[in-house]
Image (cartoon, rainbow, N blue to C red):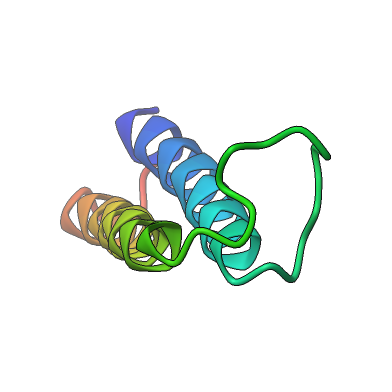
Length: 71
């Protein structure tokens, strides 16, 4: 159960980081009134958030592995 929650959190955080990065780069203009669009600082912040999400995903796999694959 714990591994599943960590995995879901990692996926959500990864998705937000991707959105932040793409908005900062001016690739995604959704929502149209977002203050992050074409703001280069959000590219760096988004990459950091992506790395946090990936770390959580990897941690969930490790938790699952350490528990013998028990979910």
